[in-house]
Image 1 (cartoon, helix red, strand yellow):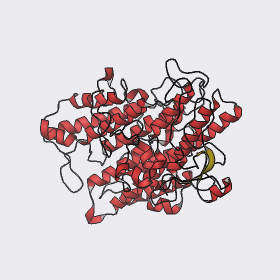
Image 2 (cartoon, one colour):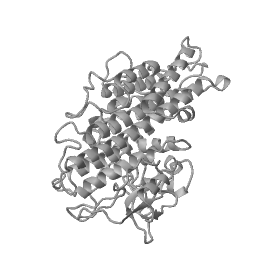
Image 3 (tube, helix red, strand yellow):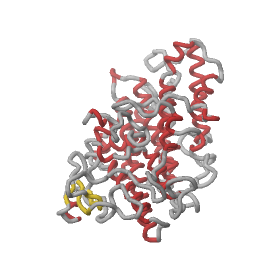
Image 4 (tube, helix red, strand yellow):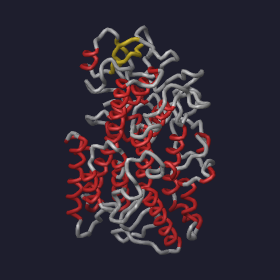
Length: 501
């Protein structure tokens, strides 16, 4: 499916679909059926039922006299001139996670260039990205790119004073649905919190780097020396584990269990929508919803892309993961770039029956339009409607993660079955992506995966893959299929999708 298509019945008839709401609180445009990409056409002559049957999107934003309907995440402030949208801090953390991954992935080259590592040296560098005390990470270069040059060059160009550890699950003072210092699950019998697990991985990478720089290398199953400090002899790729885990323990956790949650008064959806936050162009509720959207990571014109384009796997050259939508010659990493799980959603939609891209984005868009058009605190019916949009957006978001876990289960099984073509680094990479993503489900208080099933899946995954020659090799392979079946049942995935992701 394409990024803008929707299955019949998945978008409720008559709901505000698209973006721009002016100061008076009323949506602009005409009711009609929006086709999505690649045509971007509106038909105001059909009924809502006919629109659903044609797999279109019913919207109040059609410009049927010629022109394109607004399906962008675009909302004007009702307090001052300009936009009410703000989530640069979320984008900065996406950029920090990407920069940390880039640095960890280049450690083999760093060792070759600099020689011996001393204890504490490497961890101090990793903590530049993780702790970012006194904004020392602000000058770090942006490590992602799009079809044209980035508007921002460093982390602080996006937003200053941000770090990763402060937003990690368990490090918020209020609002977590579990005590992550004691209830975190998924990395063996030892008690870890999300923070202590990341720091344990950092310590292992540093220990490996010191050994390698001293000429003491471990061996892969075929006897080759392991010269990457982010790769263990057990088959753990710490770069992949760290990046995938942080996307869950920061971005997904903050979205599902903080900004879009409604369990604590004064947080998330239980915040004011009457007055502007002091000195800002938005209400607290508008801002919280935007911050959840920012952690999902979609560009503000997400529906203008095809799945191939979001994934960087084809389509228009100027839409490969990002697009210069405003035509200023650069990519604004806050509004014009697709980050994190929003990309995974498109990757899983490609060639499959799911449309996770539209499910998530349409719900984010509809919820924000409801908040803006209300112009005041939501009444009981409006709040129930907003909860529905939240549930749809977060579930589609989690399904994108879960489908990606299934994808890497399949890849890991493929590595185990590769025979003479077996590659240790590829096996470690795929297993670590599977494991890192799969740790995310526990951070959603409304996850369709029960605590019991979650623990069972991670018992089957363990904390390292079964490598060729291991006594439990075939038993472990069988366990991966069992874990895949558990996830397929929990998320109600189609068998054909599960088999081919």
